[in-house]
Length: 128
Length: 128
DNA sequence: CAGAATCCAGGAAGATACTG
DNA sequence: CAGTATCTTCCTGGATTCTG
Image 1 (cartoon, helix red, strand yellow):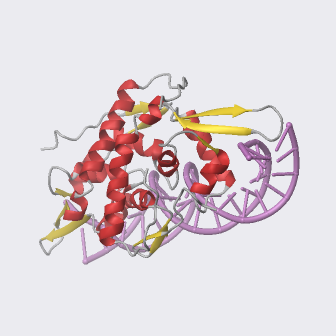
Image 2 (cartoon, chains in turn green, orange, purple, yellow; image 1 turned 90 degrees about the vertical axis):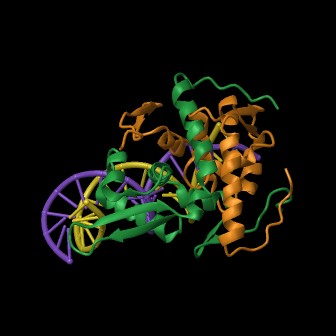
Image 3 (cartoon, chains in turn brown, orange, purple, red; image 1 turned 45 degrees about the horizontal axis):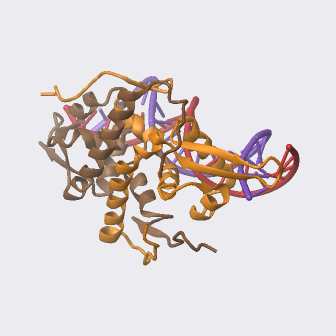
């Protein structure tokens, strides 16, 4: 009896989601993914540079997440050199770039939350 | 040239985050939270109504997430009645409403992803 | 109707050590 | 420098059952 709400399922990359929003959250959700994309806005960055930008993340996690982002087509990887002192650059793909507007909106909201934070236990109903 | 990277920490609700984006992702991230807020855009909804709108979610999870959203000040809860056939309404708070622009951007992107890259079934959704 | 209590599975994140 | 391998911990989501 879903009269008002959609009941279709949406697929991406072999998985199914209840709605497009879930797809988005799976692609860029989690603790770090959006932050990584944030730091790639200004241009390509190397593994170590990203590591410095992400206080607290371990190489293991960063490596894994970059691999996921690459697999999902949001980030591209390019390796320079052939011997041990390697140089790798990560950059946003066109697809990754298409996320930037949403990322900006999220960042704005996050900043707003942080600056206005405090006693948020008070809840006022939103006027319609 | 890493001056654009910040290394301070941001706090919200007793926790610390590496950046405001992380705060946002913690508040509305996960599989369902954003979707719940999405379905509250049009006005207050009852527990059962939300349950119908979220295909696959269990009452346990919905209840837990609503409690979290309420605790974080994004959603307000109002109970009508005093005897067992209870009626509860959930609505966006003012704070929750402040997330709507970002939510819209995310939804747009999600739709874009699904239409351009997804293997999807047709969406028959009622216009809001 | 609207949940709470309990237990469980899976995945994401983290620590540590090692390598091309 | 840029990872990988392995193990562990923690958290999210889920299933089932029960109650005001």
